[in-house]
Structures are given as structure tokens and as C-alpha cells.
Length: 80
Image (cartoon, rainbow, N blue to C red; front, side, top):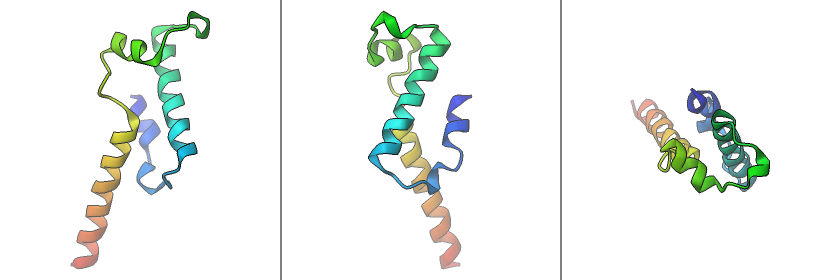
């Protein structure tokens, strides 16, 4: 449920380092909230992802994939 909400309109966002860091922070924060892990427990993000079986589900590649799909739709529209 988090991915669609966070990625809404992401194909039009400028890709900057600041936005990428914000997206990663939001992603890790929400996962930690779901697992009820406190910030004082000092668990790495990799360990948290392993607990959730989400090693491959990272927002960065998903957003990049959405951008390429959007670009394909725009290019098909303009060539017709």
C-alpha cells in the first residue's frame, strides 16, 4: 500500500540526490513503523529489509521503471 501512494506522480519529479534520500528515508521509516522497531534499537536498514523479505523492493528502481514507462507512452503519443 505504501508504494502506490509514495510513487504517485513520481515519473514527473526531478531526480535529485535530495529527493532520492528523502524517498529512502520514508521507505525505511514506514517499514520500521510496521515492524514496531524503535530508533533506539540500532538495527541496520539491511536487517530490517531481511525481516520483511523486501531486499529487492526499493523505491529507486521502481520509480525509474515508472519513468521509462511514462516516457514510452509520451513518445508513442507524439509519433502517432
